[in-house]
Amino acid sequence: MSGKGARKPSVRKSSPEHRPAGAAESNLSDQIIRGVPSGILAVDREFCVIAANPGAARILGVRPQELENGARLVDVKAITPFVDVVRGVYSSRAANIRKEVLLTVGGEHREIGLSISPLDGPGDFNGVMVLFADITERRNLERSAELNRQLATLGELTAGVVHELRNPLMVVSGMAELLMRDLDPSSKTYNSADIIFQEAQNLERAIAQFLSFAKPFEIAPAPCNPKELCDRIMQLCQPRAQRRSVWLQSTVAQGIGNADLDSARAAQAISNIVGNAIDAVEEKTGKVKLALSQDESELLFEITDNGPGIHLQDGEDLFKPFFTRKESGTGLGLAIAHRIISAHHGKVTYYNRPRGGACFEVRLPIERKRDW
Ligand SMILES: Nc1ncnc2c1ncn2[C@@H]1O[C@H](COP(=O)(O)OP(=O)(O)O)[C@@H](O)[C@H]1O
Ligand SMILES: [Mg+2]
Image (cartoon, rainbow, N blue to C red; front, side, top):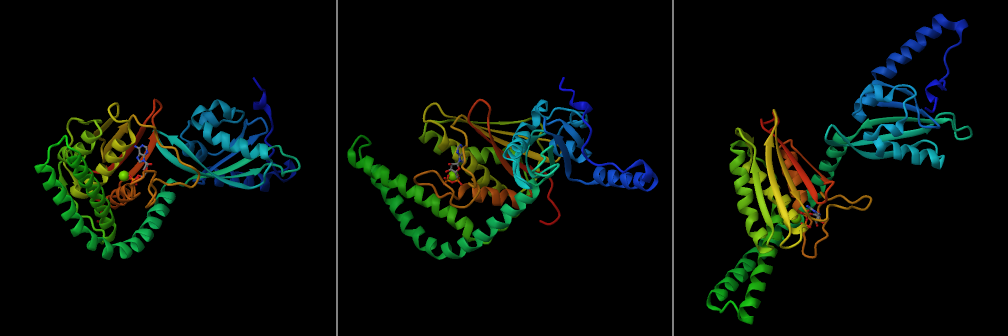
């Protein structure tokens, strides 16, 4: 036991002589602190809780008892990344720092924005005060807005060029395919024609992606059978999986009813994600799984792989147009997927699985939202 539970809060209380007015004041400030939706947490130099409001436990996804006065923050394992950030600021003795941290709260990935300040000023550093809020929605909105701005510019730029390229390219791949029909598959010439065909296909795919950006984006939701949607995604992705000898399978939970979706767009979004998973895994030993389930209000598509997982540098964003680590990548697949999913009022998130590989989660509301 550290005995820190007995440590007095360093927050000044009103003196007894002024009790009537002071008590009312402190009551009021207590009420305000309890009522604010943000999290407020004060800890002493041993990282034991001095004060925490109900918002703190709610945002961090822990039980209020875990943040009781005297509780050791290091013991609250679910918020380790949060504690690490606060500790980092504390040891640097920096004053009034803003940070962001990713936490898994109730199985969901949340972004928490923190403002950390010393409790008694840098000269006498008795602990820290942390003000924080869940900024996941705001960040998602900012990302979508930024993405839409970029997409509009990109659309204008590419529409013209892309149209000019598409037709000749289709002729190239068509001719290469014709040539292959007449050639012996073990010959060198067949191999060359095959390379022309594959590369032309890659270019066509890239052009199709550019066009998706260039066209005005509209979504036409209609009742659709999610199982059929899954089948369509598998159809779209099987050829790519076969080319790389990757095991690709889908599972669909029982009893999934119809959902209001733009099924062509949704299939495009999810097959972009499945396609990336196929690209990410090793040839022959690679495994990719698409699992569809549902809860009361959402369909959940989980795309898991046994690839290297996702490792980003500071400031990198997978969903940003042109972010790619592939030699012949466009960096548009996930940007398009994000756009389609957001237009459905859905969400796409990802995480690295504890046993390796990545998992993308796509949540799509079953019922159409009003502003469609
Ligand atoms: N399942 C995954 N595993 C590892 N990295 C991934 C996965 N999915 C996407 N990525 C990364 O995200 C990047 C962007 O994907 P995307 O927007 O589809 O563009 P592209 O596929 O053209 O590179 C990829 O280049 C890859 O580095
Ligand atoms: Mg891609």
